[in-house]
Image (tube, rainbow, N blue to C red; front, side, top):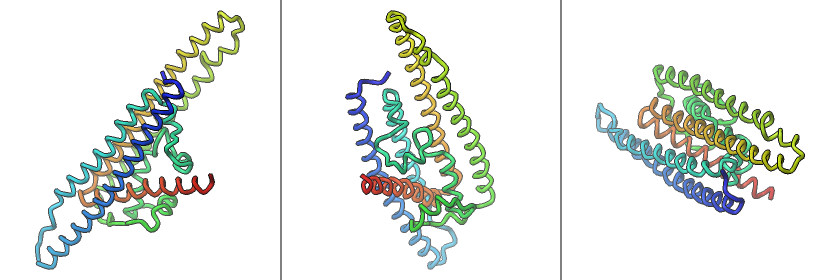
Length: 266
């Protein structure tokens, strides 16, 4: 059951503060990712110049990739905590811009977006909207993806689409029950004593509805994180770093563009 409006507002502000801090940290991590690729390129150049056959060790990149994933995990842990008492705020987040809100899917980005981003970066396919957003951003090199990786990417995309559709249908079915159940029956009661009883039934129905919303949001967030992790697992550490650079730039750029546009229209 959600708290009163004052409590909700305060907690929304608290999550907004967490989110803004999380974005600051994401920007710092982005800079670290970019620097790590520059250092790796210098090592590669050194190895080639000195006639080394082997390539530079990527263990440090692997450590960095894992740290980035933990950063995303921390976001979803915090989001899940706030969602338990403020689920409606998570479906209409005030800390996002209207642009971000327009592309929202069940309280966040579509999981298939993670695969589409990889495909666009690797040149496998062109997603016009992603390509436009990525214009002028750090590109990196993901062109070395091998056939085995391509097959794994395709399998991941098909499975992600399947689960994404299932969750979408679950939400649609849940929303349909609101119009068919106890809440609509409220209109049929005129006796004050009976109406009081009906209001209790409505409270119970809304509580169950919100519990289901929390569950569906958790499923959507789990799929988002799972898809991101599986994309990174398909890639080599160096490819993973380039991919995470693109993901962070895309997220930060959309947020910045949206906020700037909202400020101009205010």
